Length: 165
Image 1 (cartoon, rainbow, N blue to C red):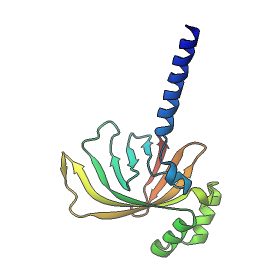
Image 2: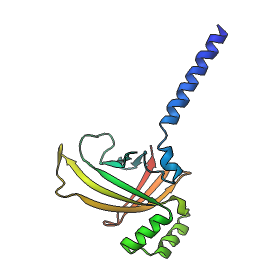
Image 3: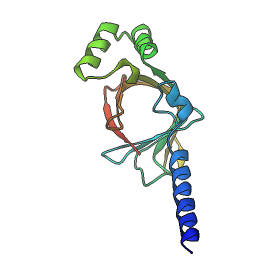
Image 4: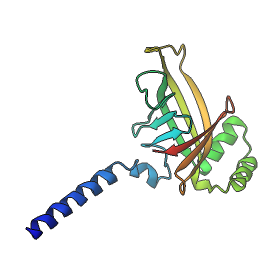
């Protein structure tokens, strides 16, 4: 009887471990320094940003309502020096200013990002009312110790603080 109980407990622990490991983001992307892809991020205001492993995203205005009031489309993530170079070359954000900001916020270049979101839909009232697809560029950083993500919208200069779900 004791042996059967031990086997059942071992099986239960194994199942929990498998479930936990399979729910952890995107290991392939993380090996490349991309801790965004394959993960869900929540703001303190209740917004939810999902970066799919397939390069698509959904940004919900309210994490509890997932069939209305959201943007969706495709995204591209650049990490580290690639992100710095992209922002300098395409958006005039000088490299020295970016590096200075990383120092100020104690951010390693390995966790510095540029994220390009191509909005394909804006669903409101159950309908897509996006007149024209558009591209929004964000930059920011990830703090692995806190599993937090800070993104800044280059167009609106709006900032977003996320926590990994």
